[in-house]
Amino acid sequence: MNRPRTLIVGAGISGLALAKALMDRELPVDVVERRAEDEQATLGAGLYLPANAVRALRSIGVGDAVAKLAEPVTRQRLHDHRARPLAEFDVERIWGDVGPCLAITRGELHEVLRTAVDATVVRYDTAVTEVAQDTTVTFADGATETYDLVVGADGINSAVRRCLFGGPEPRFLGQLCWRFIADDTAPGITDWTARLGTKGRTFLTVRLGVGRVYCYADINSRVPTAPAGDWRTLFADFGGPVPRLLEQGADAHFAALHESVNTVWTRPGVALVGDAAHAFSPSMAQGGAMALEDAVVLADALGTAPDVTAALAAFQSRRAGRVAWVVSQNHRRDRARNLPTPLRNFTLRKTGERMFKANHAPLLDLP
Image (cartoon, rainbow, N blue to C red; front, top):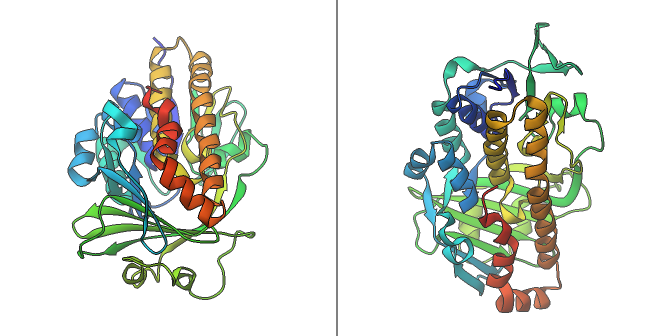
């Protein structure tokens, strides 16, 4: 039986999901995370989990725990920036019997995964400084250790990728975003609603339950730096609940959005998962879903293939086409979003639901 000793670099969502899946198969695994445990748990804001992400969580045995904390998302709505409707549909019409879509804070999802993983296998405050060709890992304290498999689950700025994969750095997508969680008990904010403004501006709200709303705003930009002044003025002409939500957004998390260019995520004894492998435009909310699917597929390959080499070949083969589809559909949706406003609004009114169905159709199948 193939029982490789695996090191996962990164204790975020993809790293912990992979650790849980490997432990369920009784495969030896260690996890290291450069951040402190309390710092890691508080990163991020909210997450929309489409049905394929929820399916992946169920497959690693944490679906019920997540569902207890999450808010069901049953409808998706597209409005213009004045809150006039463009399209609206039940998510069941997109996902069929794959399962529900959920909304949850990143911290809550991380805590479910952290609790599900044996604490003795995770070391926080432990940075990796080098990964050699023979999969000998050097840590920040100077210690070294050799593994059968090293998995980079350490995000878009992956140290594992830099050490061994080379190639171009992630590409700036020409978008800037701000994320925050607001307290809001006023009526009118339900499920998932994207408000599309002029000049490539979007303000998304996702109901998290318990009077909380996940807010995501983005704009087009030629440079990956935050504009001067208060970012909230960029959305001052948005209607509906946006003005009152923006009052709570002074300390929103800012990010310039990037997309990975590399399409090869394995080499002898090494694999990349999640954002370390394939950072995306957030257009389809598939970043977390693809990371969770990576964990499921890699664990399955390691548990069934005769050796690490065969497992990595199977992982790359099973993931490449699916990830490429998500990249292409993100680009398609971003182009549609940036059509001239009257044409964009007309297109969404006529074809919004059909477009969403087409975007997600291959993702209904198991990864």
